[in-house]
Amino acid sequence: MKNIVVLVSGGGTNLQALIDAEKRGDIKGGKITCVISSKADAYALERAKQNGIKTVTLVRKDFPDVHEYSKAMLETLKNEHADLVVYAGFMTILDETVCRAYPNKMMNVHPALIPSFCGKGFYGLHVHEAVLEKGVKVTGATVHFVTEVCDGGPIILQDTVPVLNGDTPEILQKRVMENVEWKILPKAVALFCEDKIRVENGRAYVDE
Image (cartoon, rainbow, N blue to C red; front, side):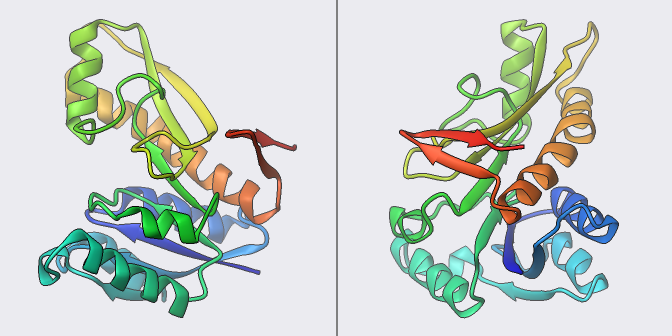
């Protein structure tokens, strides 16, 4: 049974999708054993507690710099015997030591179709604002492995939704979350736990 540690910073809707998937039995071979938050008041912590999941709070401003914060995060992940680390709305930057310690064992969900609308500055509503400004007709979300390059790791899963006339960033964000993020993140986690993802030459392949 693989230990899944989820990193959060906010409301935890993606965490909830993972919890619900686990309860349905969709995540075979894995269990969410700990939720780590970068903010003490993140509602995601409450979601974890309501479901009997251990929580740890590592507040970024309690540490002098990214290096020290990353060092504390790495120590915590090792203490929790993490087999898979999932970014679920985790908005805090970690340095390269963390992803190097967990190669192809850290995954993130990004609210756009990478390589479009990704990288530094593209997070939250900013992504959907950029999508609408560009006038693309479809958008979606991507689950990818985390590497030293922001949003640059091997792509595991993607899916799409249409961009509709009259969409606002908030409306589009909700459509992407409900129809894509909350589905492909649990699926990617399930695939990992069943050893169905392999990475070759920087590309992820799903064996289904």
